[in-house]
Image (cartoon, rainbow, N blue to C red):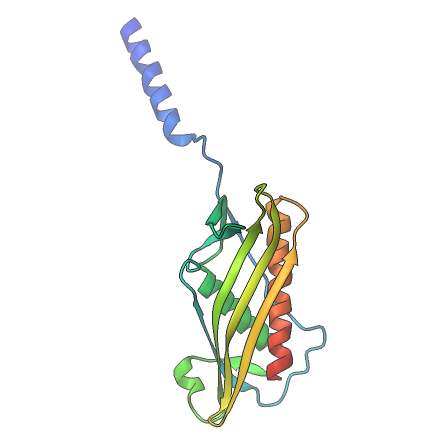
Length: 192
């Protein structure tokens, strides 16, 4: 009987290790599309395809950090809802569609007459870390083009820095949100 009770206690103790962990829970973070204050839809919005690529190192769902000595790192328990290229492509597509000027379409549809294509390379999408290890700001940078007619190409370039004065992840994500909103406004100012 004592052996059975001892075996039962060992079994329960071993199984509880499978359901508990000392590792922090992973939090997933969401960014909202930018919606202009005054949306003036047009009767025939143009078809628009959005294509986002990233420089090496940014194709991840992790919220990245960059130290003063160029070391790329990450916040251990924080992730984006998707990888950076898909996240930014979705945000820009939904934001541009919300402007009332565009309908998001595939690249093959956008290549037809009257279609538009926004191609961007995301060059920065990380939080800046000081030598002390504290987060000082968020950097978002992109470069690309907007084509709406075969003979018209506009250069799209954005380099945004948003300061951060608090180490809480919610504040850091809010800085990313502010930076993405600013980038979207800049794009809208160029292409509308």
